[in-house]
Amino acid sequence: MIFIAIVLGCIIGALIGINAPIIPYTYSGYLAIAIIAALDSVFGGIASTLKKNFDLKIFVSGFFGNAILSILLTYLGQRLNVDIYLAAIVVFVGRMFNNLAIIRRYYLEKFVKYRKIQKEKIVEYEGKNQSENAQKKEIKK
Amino acid sequence: MEKLKSILKINLKRNFTANNIAVATVMFIVCITLICVMFMQFKTVEETDITDIENMRETELRTALAEWKTKYDAIASELVDTEQKIAEYNDKMGKNDEASELINKELEQSDTILGKTDVYGEGVVVTLRDTNEKLIHATDLVELINELRYAGAEAISVNDIRIVQNTSLVDILVDIDEQYINIDGRRIASPYVVKAIGNQTYLSSILNMKNSGFIDRYTNDNHSVECENRKRVEILKYNGEITASHLEEGEE
Image (tube, rainbow over the protein chains, first blue to last red):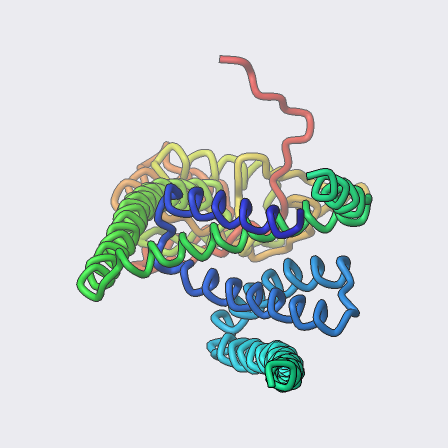
């Protein structure tokens, strides 16, 4: 059900986004930062789900809070003539890589385990077959 | 089939707990927001290539320029207004100056006429002296002053006391045969120097008229009278105050 919701949300979001008007170029910088913050939250959420300590409240507050905070910081930076958005990008992208690494490791380990089990099964099966064949041969003889 | 149905049911039951619904809704909203914003951004970035950016900047600059121009125009018009006002004020001030100058002149003239200023000019100086036989009385002085005024004297003083329109000239009796002349509350004594500014010829000719002139009459009456024509007679200002506390201006 959650999966369905995600897919549906993505489709509807894409439709809305495509049909939405173009935002002014001056504000696209803020939006980009907000997107990166939101993506960071999403990857964080996935990573925490894999670690089995996912909290909905933390996720939602992080998702919207980080986006808004990064926009505000960018605005402040522009007012102060300091590129604060660079710091935001560094932090968010760094965290994103961290979370991606966690996700990657998790699935890699899972895959490796699966392969191991499969191999064992095959070996077992082959061993069985061999023994059966041997028995059959003996019976034939 | 039966088995599949039962599995689905279990799954559905497991999926439709309150927590799961909340998570699903939140995920739905989050996905919509994120993807929507992302696509908007994609579109924006796609459709604004460099020339477009420059164009946008140009338009921005243009709008800014237009804004500044309107501001400039507004301020320029304000400046014109202010300058006009200043010119007006200056004009008014000039007028005021003229008016005040006129008033000042008038005031000076009035002061001069009233006797509030020291004045000088051509005129005559008449000196009267008490003698053993004849004393000078206030009436004699009044007569002289009257005659001087008749001759066109513009300013008169007796012993440097200015004679103005409300000056009193009286005899004060101290004893039966002792008296003195009092002008405006001040005691004066012989010699009585009467100075008058005015047309010298008129003044002297009227004073010196045979038989009817003041000097002739008084010398004939054994008074000591001297008359002197002077090119420059100095008369001091009236040093009292001219008050009009009981006067009220009549309505025109």
